[in-house]
Length: 141
Image (cartoon, rainbow, N blue to C red; front, side, top):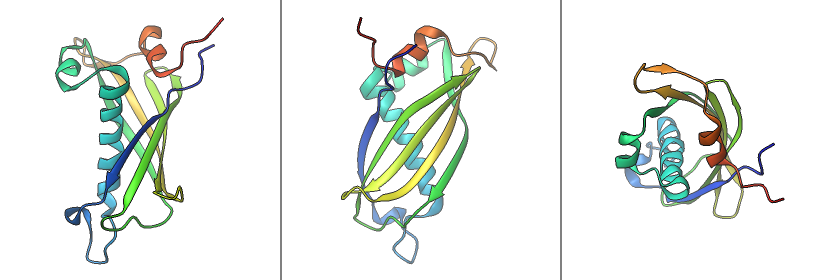
């Protein structure tokens, strides 16, 4: 059984260009926040920067995002995004994400489904055990 999931954490300050006329973050921007957060996490926690990702024999592909909007994020507000892999099932990784304001109040949450895709066949395939292990703390004996 794997150890505890590794929690990725990032912060972002809402920019003017991300706002609608009511000073709320545009709905579609939330998906970008979550996707960018995970990609930055892969770079910072696993060492997979964009150059490295291009050289791997597989791709990670976001299949689905289910976003719950709990309260609006507003211009110049600092938000904190955290996420972790909840489980792997076949070719899918289920990633729980949450967004809070600087005080820790919930703003949004997301369930992201990410596929493991073999570059050679261009087909989704089961996540290998060694790759899955990168998302969990190492067990201590």
